[in-house]
Image (cartoon, rainbow, N blue to C red; front, side, top):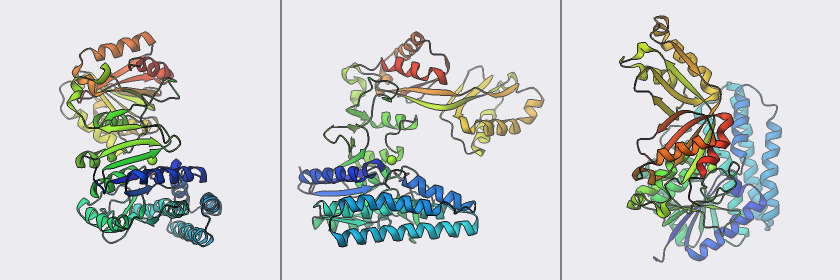
Length: 475
Ligand code: ASP
Ligand code: MG
């Protein structure tokens, strides 16, 4: 074990969302320091804060600033209550509150400017969204200090350098590596825990950017990979990755391990575990990643493991590892005998879908080529149908396309497991379990990675299908 072992820990919104949570986070940092001489802490905004900020900006862009005072006081109460409860030293407490207040006032200024302009550019939205993490980093830094951890709050805008794709910025890994090491290493060398903002970075010119909603997991992976750290721990409010949603199946349990491709599939199919972009930097750098629960810290959580050749022999014969459901989807079908063998129909169809800025989680096409069927989120379905009718207007008139239609609400149920790739008959088992459950299956798709099989069921059968498929997971 190298003497200078480094650990990067990221606390999600609920893990810093109240005085009680912050106290638990403080203890977690202390315990980690006993094991790791070098610790970097990354924080999200307190839970609910990013939404509050973005709502305020959205209102302002319609000229509405009436609710600004209420937003201001909610933000003040939330941060100040925690500061009052946890920061004993009066000077530290007052300066922390003052810094937070300055950020709140900058939100008010930004919103007023937005209201005058009547619009908020992506760049402005990032400036607004960044305020949550920038408030929280000051609070957490001071709370740690009060808890006896020598800590320093710094904004990641100083060292996470990104392009100017506001709201979805991409880091420049080369510059970020140099800067992160230059800023964080001297602090850690001096025995200080750097506490920094997740979610945000800055362009080389210094404009604040964000990495996309939920992006502070990605920040942890970026910072962990460029240092590089030995391990990255993501602290959240559940015991790691579960076999399924415990609200649907009471036997759901935590998976001790999950492979990179399984977690990518789960993230894609709606399991809110970690931000999908988190995976790549840690895989590329060969760094460990653990997902664990601030409110149950002695639980080992879930470890991400490489896609080892043991894929060939799934542990304990466990082929299916997890089941997920994405609700509120519609199946859209384009149907017509005139589509047979006509090139370009799919391209035009998905071009039309893309023009509505809708992403498609599942596609199936029968080999007869007489229909293309895909899922879209319910709220986007109508605009998708309109776009398809417009792009195929002449085919519809000529009756080459008979109709473009959509179902009522459906759910996409996905079973995930790398072992499926080498185990014949899994699909058969999946369908016989589903058949026994009497859930009505409308469409099926298997990813070419063979790590998952997805089925579309009517909304009312969601629980039935998930429960039936969860029985396949070896207890
Ligand atoms: N606070 C940001 C968000 O709510 C980033 C994060 O929490 O990961 O999207
Ligand atoms: Mg999150």
